[in-house]
Image 1: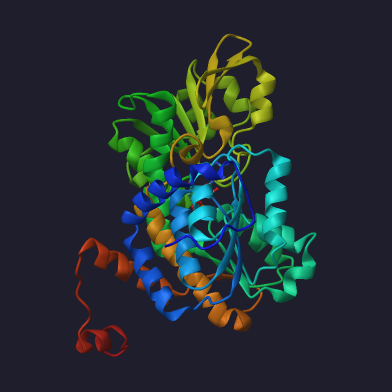
Image 2: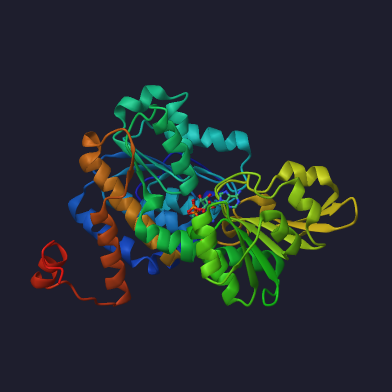
Amino acid sequence: MARTRTREHDVADLSLAQAGEGRVAWADGQMPVLRSIGQRFAREQPLADVRIAACLHVTAETANLVRTLIAGGADVALCASNPLSTQDDVAAALVERHGAEVHAIHGEDVETYYRHIAAVVDRGPRITMDDGADVTSVIHGERADLVAGILGGTEATTSGAIRLRALEAQGRLRFPIVDVSDAQTKRLFDNRHGTGQSTLDGILRATNLLLAGRVVAVYGYGACGQGIAQRARGAGAHVVVCEVDPVRALEAKLEGFEVLPGIEAAAKGDVLITATGGRDVLGAAHIEVVKDGAILCNAGHFDVEIDLAALRALAREVVEVRPSVEQHVLADGRRVELLARGRVVNLAAAEGHPAAVMDVAFATQALAVEHLVLRGAELGHRVHAVPEAIDREVAALELAALGVRIDSLTPEQRAYLSSWDQGT
Ligand SMILES: NC(=O)c1ccc[n+]([C@@H]2O[C@H](COP(=O)([O-])OP(=O)(O)OC[C@H]3O[C@@H](n4cnc5c(N)ncnc54)[C@H](O)[C@@H]3O)[C@@H](O)[C@H]2O)c1
């Protein structure tokens, strides 16, 4: 896409645009589903003049989502959903080459982070896009004056959806949200296979550890935990799973993983990984029993899964021993290695998901935005599942991109499967 005009922005350095553009193009090469949607959007202009306030990880893959929305006619303002995941060169490319408004700087402090969210919200969006519910929260708090103009929003992650469902349960949600984190294709690609692979990638880049023969404890056996556990096992680790949900714990046991209470796993693990969406999953009691040299990291959305205050309080010394590795020396001399300051390790210590994973998740988001523009006014003020038709369309586009062909039901089979009187 050609450069249009330089929009309002607060990015680190616009001269990085050329390098960023290279990354965006590389990711584009692995995002065929989004590209095909972008081509249709360019023809049909379903988002013509729709203002979008997006708070997403500012990465090369997100840049391709933004390009797709702009191709469909949208006016996009983007800020970061995590201060450490912003790729400054990509932010520059989006402003310089693609006509997006971007407010995001890698490593920005908390005050700047919220100033950037406010700048994006100030655009008076018709559609919101969140990855952690921050834009929606700001609008439901100090910017309730904007609610009337909003058709709806999307939410990309489980933790954000939990916050929004809490708002809905209190009867305070003021516009419809499509929970993209719940799409079947998204959970498969992003939570399970993307988080599984890239969490290990983050740990390996930070530590250069050999996983074979190590004990890896995975806290939470949802889609993310399942992916991490599978990949760690594939790398030769002995995997221990900790759960609070008996069905999930049973599933882990039947998959052949050892299942233990969290404290026992903490005493046994060489690497402890949280992926629960909850808080204080690894607290003082766990830190008291960890082995010397234990590695602690988090793949959940917020940096509250490891009790950082407890870890600091128990440490007599904290040293940055490698990039993304803070060594906490406890009173008795044991060393606890905290990765990426307890933030989401696959983004903060690696590059997040491979572009092919984000292709599916972002294709769903792009189609969810189109759905909200077309149908948002008819939808109730609830957190909605992704319509099944979107899930199937994304899966079909992905199969086509992979060159995989499948059968379809014959009319007789369809009739049989929907009848009640043909049992025997
Ligand atoms: N790192 C990434 O790239 C990435 C990608 C997608 C989602 N996420 C985040 O990862 C987290 C998990 O996502 P998910 O889709 O697997 O969620 P999920 O809700 O399907 O699974 C979470 C599991 O954790 C369990 N759990 C909760 N508290 C626990 C505790 N104290 N101890 C042990 N188990 C506990 C729950 O019972 C549940 O089975 C969320 O915060 C989500 O936003 C991260």
